[in-house]
Image 1 (cartoon, rainbow, N blue to C red):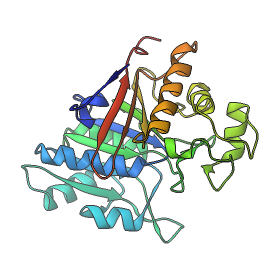
Image 2 (tube, rainbow, N blue to C red):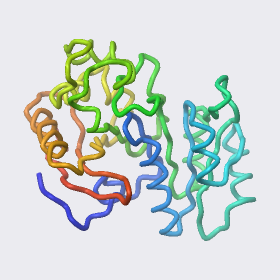
Image 3 (cartoon, rainbow, N blue to C red):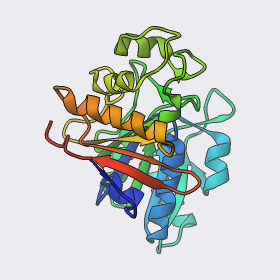
Image 4 (spheres, one colour):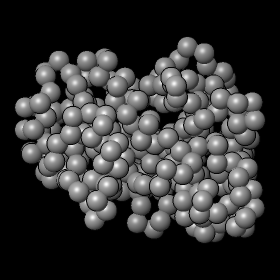
Length: 268
């Protein structure tokens, strides 16, 4: 474990040459996706932003040029019409979902085809929903992760810790209680977050076999939250069985920052 002062978010998360990056969890997932998109655009990359589930209409349309498409071929054609060859980002959705304030996502198979096409330097995929709460537990049908994902990021908001476990503080609180062995109404503690990551039906669920899995603990800017992050680190490192290759504690706003990284879980 070590503190990082000048390392970039891209370096900390180990994105390297990962072309298809799937992001799930809660507590800053969409912000992370848009932040990474801007960083890649600043590097002159051709970036596609999309989802396999739903994304808020206001978030999608207020941040980047948006297109409506349902197939890989349609996405590539519309992207080439709107984004210059020297780089830029675009959001692709299938248009309105049943919820009028949401936009529907592409099928994971189409995103795999987009990766295989080589048309994009980076593809960023939001792979589940969280109702804008800091923490969540996955339903049986999520996340929806494209099979050709190069790197899988789990996001968890440390601001959700020490709050009472309930639907106002954590998305799908009853599932979380089952995964972690905690009770509704009890404070959500760092050890429960670690348990939710480690459980086979928990936050790492859906990561394709052989794909690098990274946990990003967001909002670690205060001393208490950094101490909580370290407790999550300790619980993960002491546990047997599969775990994330890397765990990063940091923040995204007002500017991205990294407080600590632990990467000795690589071969656990």
